[in-house]
Length: 388
Ligand code: SF4
Image (cartoon, rainbow, N blue to C red; front, top):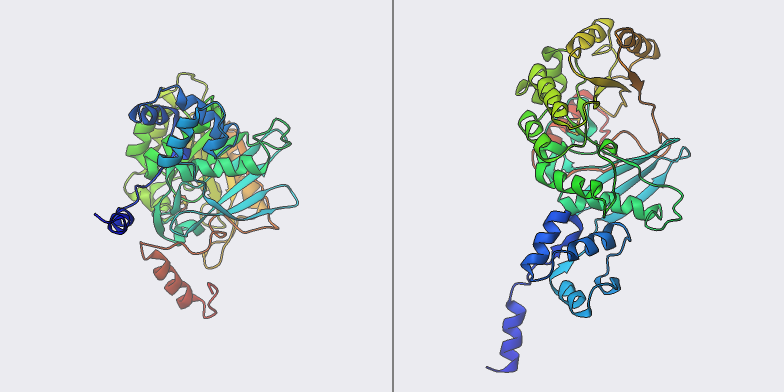
């Protein structure tokens, strides 16, 4: 065979895709090293390099032999999503726009507080659950993020705060899976990414500082307690099925009683019995903010160890909802507190840099055609085309 022909044939061979080690949990990395004929302890070395040292170049991993570095270079990679922009608010809130494979963008937010810094991470591009008050839901759904794209968000934030060096001034101390997407609809990748967050040889976050927030994918929530013990937040937003069916359509499949029982089962599986579920309740003017709703909520949650986080609705174009008034917010909070609940009110942060969650990422390449329907609805109700 001529050399030319051989070269052509080689060129025609499909390039074997490199495996991205960024999103592999400690156990998956061990399996990977075993499969390539290496000792399992290499997994610990690599996970430390990537997630504690912030190193993505195999050639700089000096405790690996040269042969192993070359081998890894051939078959593997450490590939991060791309940062499109990062804006910082006067209050220290940071918002990133991040491009993932396929060209779509997701968003990530860091909220500094006195004693902690919380990173809000996305799990999907868009969301299929279509909650009526959610800007992300209106964008439709494109795909699940890979575990590398999920943990890559934490890596990016850590890197931008110089957290891989001991002199870091800011750190991510808490992670909430509350960005774009419903985390339990992307179960395996989210569980893998969270296990890297908790892993001592990676970020070493405590299970109390990693929170998964769900709108009520009950079968997956029932499974979660078998593989993870992170903190749980449930997005309720309504105290009865009739209203919740309108606001959070997945409620039609898994009604409130089933959802709350599943959340209760989850925390009962935890080895420490002092855990509480965080109940998230977005307050919208004249929709779910009345005294009767607060009283109903108090009854609904009476058997669930929980604290309640009230979130004033953050309006977006065409949502059709208005935010709660201060009077209604205070009244709602006071009724719950009088019933003995711990209640916090989420303050709006980073007002000067972007709008509500889901409005920064631009248009999702929507496979659900929901965007089309939503735009049509907007055009029908608003002659000015505000989406353009
Ligand atoms: S609130 Fe959460 S689950 Fe509902 S549409 Fe928005 S991102 Fe999806």
